[in-house]
Image (cartoon, rainbow, N blue to C red):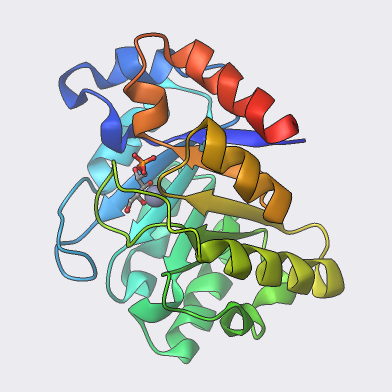
Length: 218
Ligand code: DX5
Ligand code: ZN
């Protein structure tokens, strides 16, 4: 089953509650946290996740594009995240392992994220305990960029590793997803599709979600 995860990065932050309700037919709500250091953009933090938690029962998929994410795992878990993803490039491997251990302790699902430069094999030390691997299909930092086709190879490689070592683990793709690239990504092995501009750039976000679902299932 293909899951759709609208990214609120493309929502209207003044009307965030309304824009969250508009995507309630989706599976996950994708929340992009950026620190202005790991990526050049700054977005939202713990208090906003806490407020989002109060206004929706949706599964909160929180993508941490921050340096040394281990510092914030407990805070985001307490704020109501259901899943946290930490970038493998954001800290020393020992600290990534510690971040995952803390996620387990806090009862949130565990994910690692890969920038386009990072090889699929980098997930191996963590894979047996992961709930999800996030493969970036753009350079993280901004919505509205074009899908990087070479990442289809990384998706295929990550899917092969998942099948071998942890078949229950999900494979999420993030960046430049539209009906065409959704189909490509699913064929390569993705089962969770993040989409910001394709959902919120449409005058009917629910129809856009349904279209992505159909594209992914074809
Ligand atoms: C980018 C973010 C994405 C972004 C995707 O760094 O991680 O989640 O919102 O936006 P689109 O779907 O517009 O590429
Ligand atoms: Zn994201």
